View 1 (tube, rainbow, N blue to C red):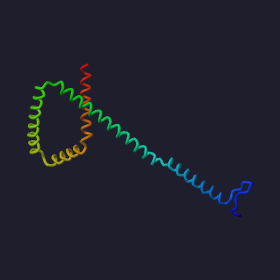
View 2 (view 1 turned 90 degrees about the vertical axis):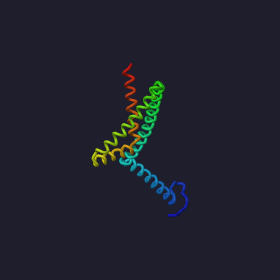
View 3 (view 1 turned 30 degrees about the vertical axis):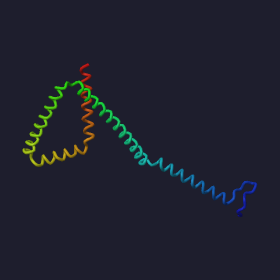
View 4 (view 1 turned 90 degrees about the horizontal axis):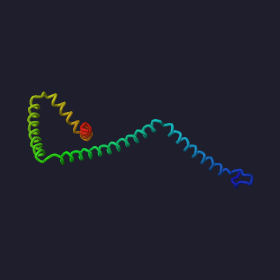
Length: 154
């Protein structure tokens, strides 16, 4: 065999055959990789779960912002409709409640056994660590109650 160019008959040269074999190997390798990726259900599930998780996080952020805005609007409406003397009395009452709560808390702490205080401390720490979700739930509850109350009057 010689390394001469093709003859008029169309027989490929050994170099051309090597190139064809190499191209075919590359194409076959790519095909095998594509098939392996399609067969890897675990990886596909993981990718889909990640995508869904990101979508949920985005939607949660949007809904949380909407709830926060509605709660602020509701608070402004209530404050705008409340007379000044009532606001003053509410502030005074709030101060009295804070003082009474502080006294009651001290009394309860003095009379509560140590293990119960430890558990309560751990619960408070957990609540502080998850402050945002707890606030979002609280705001959602307040908005729900306000909406129900408003519909009940109609």
